[in-house]
Length: 365
Image (cartoon, rainbow, N blue to C red; front, side, top):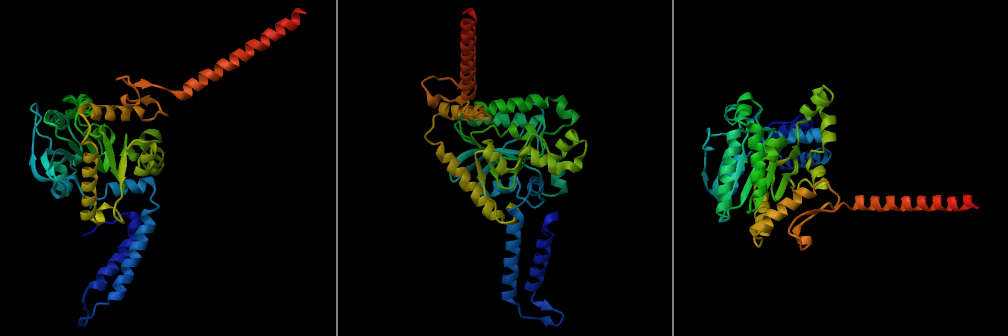
């Protein structure tokens, strides 16, 4: 049974009508199916979906990203990856089921898969801890990323989490340190590291695996430092202001691609990824292969520098320059706006000094 969001009520009514029209049985028994009527209703549904999903606000996109029917990480693994071998444990504490990790093949290319899994139903969600990783999960990822780096295997991460688990046990086992170490490990890899945000990309729980050469989002996914509800609770002490918070946080794919936080957006099927699982899986697979191909001729050092330069440039207007822009092997900061400001200030000072000098000469006579 399909689940509907609050703003999809009209679509639900039309689809209920569509299903009844497809039913060959009526009160009098078997009847003829009206194909013209079915076609017309389907066109109305498509038009309504196009109208709704072309004008979603940030909070509505958040609800779509959390949709119960949205394809989860395990679905993408089953559809995209062959010969998948799951690897478990951090060799320190235990296994974290909120992250599926292992080696597999995508079109005969060996890859390491790190996939945050929320679960499909209540029992699996409880088992997966709703995709909220604990320290042992991040340490498992670090262990496997280092292994992949040693053998030259690209890393593919599927991001879908409201955030890292904030429980007391996780904090006692070093949650913050585990997240920081995971970010450091991601940034230090000499192999391509590609992250795809398939649902929620929440806080440090997401960035711990999304410090990648390419950060890719599905069209209706979100990526933010905190949930809209959490932001509203902190700023306004009112969770009902989630819409205002979501708009202010710029957490949608449209906002983040403009800001340069993400590198690519995968367009979703009409009505969201949950309406055509097969198509979105095929599109995600193609995107992964295209991006892996773009790094084929890169050396390990070039891959590392590309990732480092990309993150250092974020939020800066032509700020850091990478090694490809000069002979120097380091990154240097070049803030042109600051240089222009200094030059302007110098001109003002010189003009002022000249005026004072002229006045002094006049007063002398």
